[in-house]
Image (cartoon, rainbow, N blue to C red; front, side, top):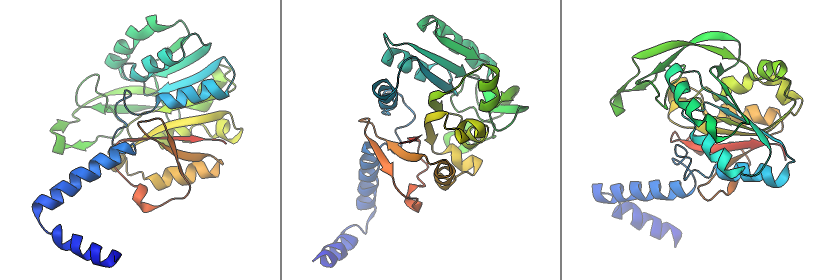
Length: 265
């Protein structure tokens, strides 16, 4: 019966109109799974991870917002953590974008603003972007001609590591590490080997999407990296439900911005 239905649908879909409808349906269904919805904090489900630390960890909470841009995630965090004790460390290397981020300083006196990037080593790197303040700024000169975007502007920025920053500032544990560094998330967590080896980072929220095409990093890289540290990955859905990724499969290589969280259970 299944084969008969399948064969019928194959024949019925053999036209442009049907294929277009299937594509739209696929996009819609994937959006309910969180695939492609990771670029907007209002419907990404990221709030659920902040709520998770409130329910399961003790105050004061320690949150790192790496790739803070203009403070979108910071604003969400402060709103969710209302009446709680916490410290939020923000990192934004771009000079213009950092000035915009500082406008959020009145949100709380428990925010630490850092005009640096985090990576796998302490160094100076070129940060490329199409316009000052771009949310797509990256250490990789991305090819986005298909979106009529040209990453022809750049500036030299300072890069440190998570291990060094925490050692310098006597930070013992990070409850929630949020990464949005346009395809260079692996670099940041490679610079946290000491923290990870000693189980001092509990949750890591990261994006995976089109920028990983330019940096040539795959979901497979993330899966096996976190597996090495006994951390399980969940896909964050718009509802806030965390869907477990129990094994690596090639279908996970979906290059539309999607949020995931890795955590110790």
